[in-house]
Amino acid sequence: MPSKLSEDFQAPVHLKHQDFTSLQELPDSFAWTQRNDDDSHYPSIGDSISEHVPVIDLFDPNALQLIGRACKTWGVFQVTNHGVPSTLFDNMEYITKTLFSLPVQQKLKASRSPDSVTGYGVARISSFFPKQMWSEGFTIVGSPVEHFRELWPDDYSKYCDGIKEYEEEMKKLAGRIMWLTLGSLGVTKEDIKWAGPKGDFQDSSAALQLNHYPACPDPDRAMGLAPHTDSTLFTILYQNNTSGLQVMKEGAGWVTVPPVPGRLVINVGDLLHILSNGLYRSVLHRVKVNRSRQRISVAYLYGPPSNVKIAPLSKLVGPSEPPLYRSVTWNEYLGTKAKHFNKALSSFRICAPLNVTV
Picture 1: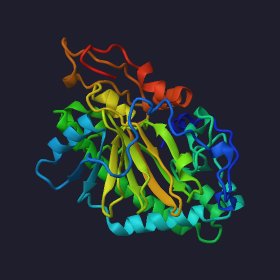
Picture 2: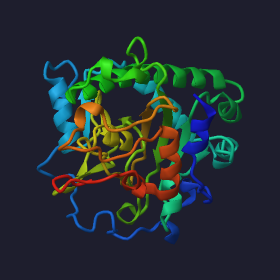
Picture 3: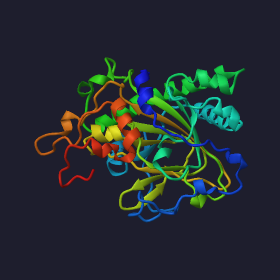
């Protein structure tokens, strides 16, 4: 992956790393208010709700139409029959749990440095909030070998091999989902030059994010990951058997995405929002924490080749539906997101017809 993407993927974060295992009470620096500006206009919704995030079988003959409907109305859906062996998820869960169970001083040996995006650290969005989040993460762009040598000096190669195998499988799945999503918009291979000669998106960019949300002594006042949208085309998320992920459904509020074995969560990112000219909206999501159980997740952050300009598809614009966004590369967008956070998308808006809310 081009190094430029690594540079722009970073955001300045200057927070102390916390040893969560030593805390019996929630420190004030981690105590969030019950409500904030992101959800002040919506009711608070728990697990008992009447609405459910769509679940789509990728073998369903109507998968293309179902994905289009889910992207338009939810911005998120879960997939089954995706073809990823369960053994890969088991291995990724093992790697993730093993990594985050290391002593904090050991993990800090693999901290993200100013000139590398890969490594251990707090969420990049932390600098935009006055309170800290009850989580820790490990980002991988390119090879993790240098950092994994610090974590596991004697057997780092087996962990590197596991990451590589998972990324290869995710890349194949991402290409499949990308064509289903584009197909739902009426787009063909002839319309997407950056898909490559074989139409397999071989030059696409990606990052892998390992997340850990430790058990929390006061989960009702803590936040695992604050409300945000992803900068991606879309994100493929694996979550273990502990609930926590919530998405914002317009007119309803926060809806929990339950962890179900065999399912993967797909959520629309800002670049797909731009590509679809606002038809498929990037979804606001957050993570709540649990009192007695830790939660882990593995996010595959999928984007276009780093030098490709993303703009509203020509098939989706015309005299009555002008383009709502100006073109931008993922590199450029990541840089803007690092500075302006959730206001980044609106900064690329050109205009908005009266019947479209962006």
